[in-house]
Length: 250
Image: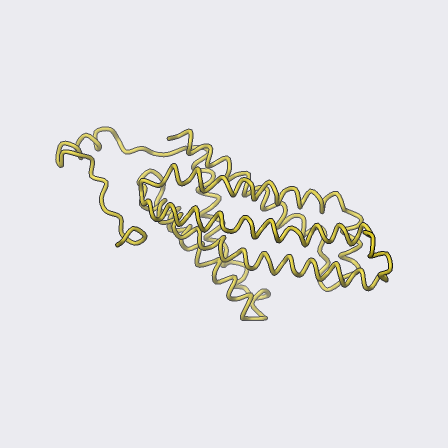
């Protein structure tokens, strides 16, 4: 079981590192908010960084496709229906993410002066690039729905499994609410992105995901003491696994 735990931790680490690179570092270096010409110029001057950002997103999404499968094998005994929901919600985001990457590939085509685009003026080119970048950002906003929803069954399983710290499960479930709040705030409240709440609403998700990643990778799982298992068998004739509530309620 510790082997599966560390594999899940490694996949999670790849997801976190690659995601931080393409979602955080690359935009911080290339985006010039409110200045289309400066943004286009930065992308042209640092095209290699822009391309590496796309590659990092591919790596991130491949790892994220495999991650819930490893977590399912590790955590399914804590709630089979919750484990299926976790896998379904996580993997549903991957094809959307790959489709969203087309906007960044379109930016490369635009800046590479693909056939049929040579007649565009500089201003027209800037407008087209910014439309693609804006469409990409809107795609990320939609992805937040799934990035949040999968954390609810995942956090529930971490809380119930008995071999991972329950506080991580609580943080993950709060992280689900944080992602959904960020999506709704950005969609419905024009002033939300500049508000103080936007700076902290994702904190539980970050703490829960990074904490779970490091725990699985470095510490594995804490199995119940053998004496406790023996006591459970002697008192009831079998190991008491309990009945799931919540996600496994019928």
